[in-house]
Image (cartoon, rainbow, N blue to C red; front, side, top):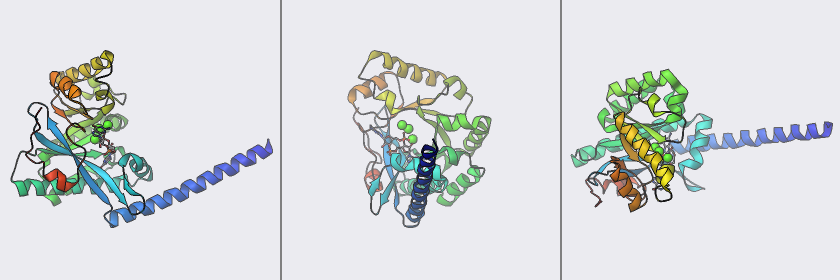
Length: 281
Ligand code: C2E
Ligand code: CA
Ligand code: CA
Ligand code: CA
């Protein structure tokens, strides 16, 4: 028993050691990434399902790592969250998205590009100076608050309870629009969300991907869309990949769609070329 205990103890220590090292390595990499501009934003079109027009983009982080190549956010966001550096990285992304959107609006003198959507992590959302930071970003980039949509997950809102609602109200008063991200993956109820100042509900891709598969799950989507509409929210469907999914969603009067059917996330050169574009739907 003693030997086993010792082995466990050593294993534990070794794990701690490698984790600590890995963490240190990652933190170094992340600091360097910010300094050396290794982060990039990609932009995925959000399309009106009424008329096929491009109405906005969701800004999505990419990490161009010098040795490991282009890293997807699903591979590094959890680590960045854990290390606490998500706050810094998140503000970098927000600033960059606002700067880009402002320059597109000026260059194209257009109001056809209505919104830039940016993801806000749980940790960022619970920062005490959130409102000041966002105000400062809008001020320094010159972007109109009405052109910014912040995407917040159900769990971020539920974890922060009443405080979350107060923060959301402040953001809303600034003129920023709010959407609830990945809806259906958390445990919140639409009736609770009703009390929050949220104008758009984004249905998670996992539901949209079920559309061709079987009738039962179709009812879930139908229920979500109908309830959201009753509560005065617009609905954006994530992960639209097929024309059958598109037809089904249009039939339920889902306002907007996003997904590979329209476009993958694009770098800024490819994104700007789509401003004013209209898909034939
Ligand atoms: P998300 O907010 O749910 O973003 C949508 C994800 O679905 C993106 O993955 C997008 O590329 C992918 N996607 C869009 N359409 C389709 C489709 O038709 N089929 C499939 N299979 N996938 C589709 P991505 O870019 O890898 O981002 C993953 C997640 O990382 C995001 O999920 C978001 O939670 C997080 N993330 C990305 N950028 C940021 C950021 O700046 N800040 C924070 N806090 N999180 C971010
Ligand atoms: Ca999102
Ligand atoms: Ca999402
Ligand atoms: Ca999702």
